[in-house]
Length: 207
Image 1 (cartoon, helix red, strand yellow):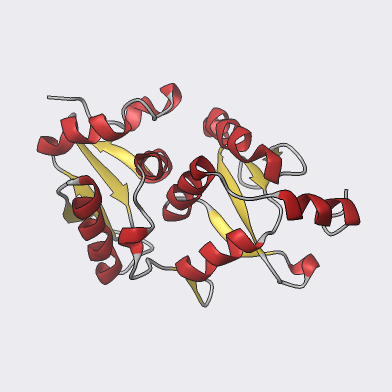
Image 2 (cartoon, helix red, strand yellow; image 1 turned 120 degrees about the vertical axis):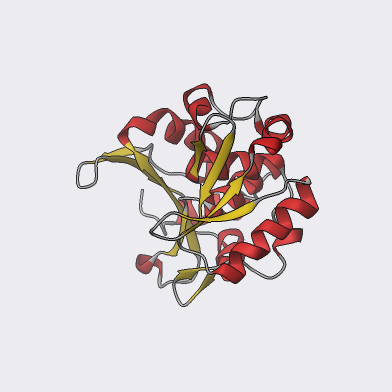
């Protein structure tokens, strides 16, 4: 089905992000998700692309189920980078989020992130996208693409909205946000039941 056919335009008019979809969207944009304009449609509206390595196929399928009403075709394998990927329809709701999180094609952290990044689901998605266990009881988030000022905005948001204390670590390639071991239990309280079984290896071990 053409992405701008009459049927698709009618479908697009019926769509509105649910609270779960919006939370997953925000977490994905903080992580590996990408919002971009569809050139075939004249760059009028943005769409969401989800792509993860082949070993994370169950995670891609899980996200696909969440956004299935926004997607015309199921996830497909991309041999060029050994990944699984799907894209949504372009839509004004994605465009609105794109305008918040992008400047000149670069992903940024908006100044009002405290009012956007508010759901444990968003935190869980960000962890599943970009998190990795640091030692047994610590956890870090790869934030190489963000400036120090943007990382500080995120740290402030994590404390204000989730009471999670963090530090900044340099890993030789860039800066990452680190949750120290004393935050493990609180972090697990927020996201432990949301993180997929196949992604539990990213979580710290509770003290």
